[in-house]
Image (tube, rainbow, N blue to C red; front, top):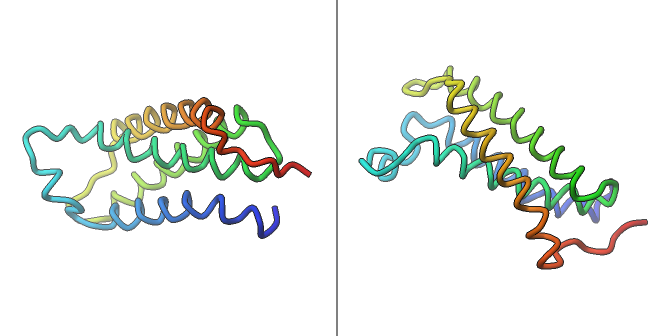
Length: 131
């Protein structure tokens, strides 16, 4: 990887940092989480679908793997990050470490990773940067 590939990974890294920041808060979005219509697991899935999609975008632009392999790696990376995020929440007052939250994260990561492939193919987001 050289410096011209790094900008493609920055959105995923920034998004992971945002997830970490929000996970460090006891009540990160009370205006959203305390509503009767909010389903916690859907929020988890959406959060990690975004992370996996950004990872697919970044990984495909490294030029070392195809989109399907990048999607699989993105899903694995997002799932591993979700597991560490749940463990991190165990130490935050007012938060908990929940395997069902991780399963929702994994579901979202799978959806985001798999849906990113046809989206990127359709809209031509893959640059021709192969050596």
